[in-house]
Amino acid sequence: MKIVTTLIALKEEIKAQKQGTIGYVPTMGFLHEGHLSLVDAAVKENDFVVMSIFVNPLQFGPNEDFDRYPRDEERDKQLAEEAGVDLIFMPQIEEMYPEEISMKLSVTKGVDVLCGQSRPGHFDGVVTVLTKLFHLIEPTNAYFGLKDAQQYAVVHQLVTQYNFPLTLIGLPTVREHDGLAKSSRNVYLTKEEREKATILYKSLSFGQQLVVDGTKNHATIKEAVKNYITTNSDATIDYVDVLPYPTLDRERETDKLIIAVAVQFDKARLIDNFIITNDGEKIVQLREGGL
Image 1 (cartoon, one colour):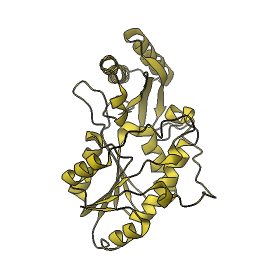
Image 2: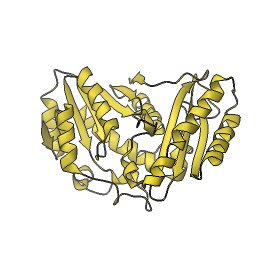
Image 3: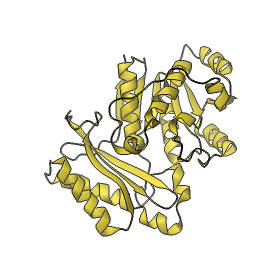
């Protein structure tokens, strides 16, 4: 496995792989089983696998946890190599943004709900850095976890509307034995909070069952899931929502919907979701091409 830190070195490595397929796994590091499941899929489906490890400052607001975001570069390198990554791109901020950005991409739809409503500008930062990385790495396939379902939906729009010649692959959320989604922020939970955090998975399962049983009205499902959380826990709800997917637009019905929850603990804000059909069948993988 090679590690490069500059754009020039990255482009040289990519240039040498033009005859094969490139799988790309973008991360902000502090790798866990969720990231490694993406690598596993990329290794199986591609000739060459690239992982980026970059804590992107454009994704963090002024009161968010950029400085506190967990980092462990040596551990990340070891895990990536063991998983089969061929190349890690690990730039410094100055390498990615050598000067003040004079133009930026702005996401105008699908960001006024879920996490986007409390994180203005967050997804602008996501699509800005991914546009740079997609151009630099030129992946055949790019892998994302569906735990960050709003991010996947936004990236889907980026890939399709700007005609990136790649296949976007959304893979299942990796979970603990009790259903809690794997997350870099789980390390912030106390032992007591960790036990309470199962309410996210339980509430989503409750919402899915409502759909299976025939409930179609999104507002009804939303309120029922909220009530389930407040009745069965003392967790602080950030949001609960039910939306068409991947449009995230209440006015644009699709054949899929997302039930999404976010709960705030003392030092950790956790998110989770189920993507299901309109009949309640869980969707665990998405695969969509650009161009």
